[in-house]
Length: 255
Image (cartoon, one colour):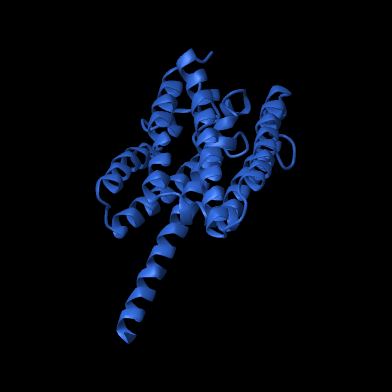
């Protein structure tokens, strides 16, 4: 039985990142429409309504499937959990590389994009508490093999650095690559901890089934996709900044 710290910690963090996404989307959409000298109020209202609808549907889908126990049925081929999480991560990448991600990368300050990933610091603290309570497998916390707490900690420090004066682009690149590497590592560990693989042992305490329950289902279906989307957008922002610098150098060369 998870404590209220673990239960409400995961829930509140999922709500927080959902709010951050909606606020960022509204800000980026309004800025994009203003740059085109288009009427913003009606268009923004329509786009926000659609995003909130699809977000609420996705949130409800994860909760419903978990409540029905379908996410704990790993005998299905393929398991519903794999399909759900895979679709969420793929959708995050698609959003990041399409016009939505472009608007985020163009209009949302890089400092805000980086700071938004600092949610991973409290998340890892909650996950550590979960493993201490026997709710989550130990290998998924920083006492085991998950060191994503570094990504969250550096996101907070780097974000503040960017706000105060601007960190070198190379430092942001290093953090972004670190974060993507940590995400890939924890994804591998999570898959290796499923009942089919049971790489760390077949004892219940080593099996990654806790995310098949509400509210923990929103960790792989909301928090992880938000992290993936964030890294995708930061990558686009860094690439765009590099392209602008190269164009400026070429322009100065021919002036």
